[in-house]
Image (tube, rainbow, N blue to C red; front, side, top):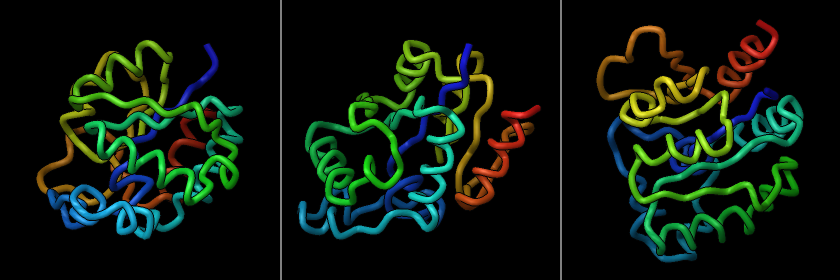
Length: 165
């Protein structure tokens, strides 16, 4: 099976890693204008561009949110021309209502590698996704044997190494 990558949106692509456990209130509860003005995580576009190339375009955003935030997410992706900047197909975006449901999307898509900033998501993905990366600073302890890259360059380097291993 060819490798396939899943990437969370909030606090991974958009918004940057916040203090552990903090919500991105500008994006979640602010106006659409506020959401569109919110920044990408430092290095996210460059990292995604490299990963899209390494995975031959087999990269999906898999995000947990409701309908209102889903609309904001799609608008943000278009506003920042994520598809044009990274080469990730525009249609490769999946949404679910509960974090644990990301495992369903990963199974359907055959995701082999996943980047997410939530430990509970990674617990749900155990046995479904072979290589998992817990992105950014964490509030509590990082589970043993779960890589915890803090930046996009670290994440890309870890994934690149895992692809050749």
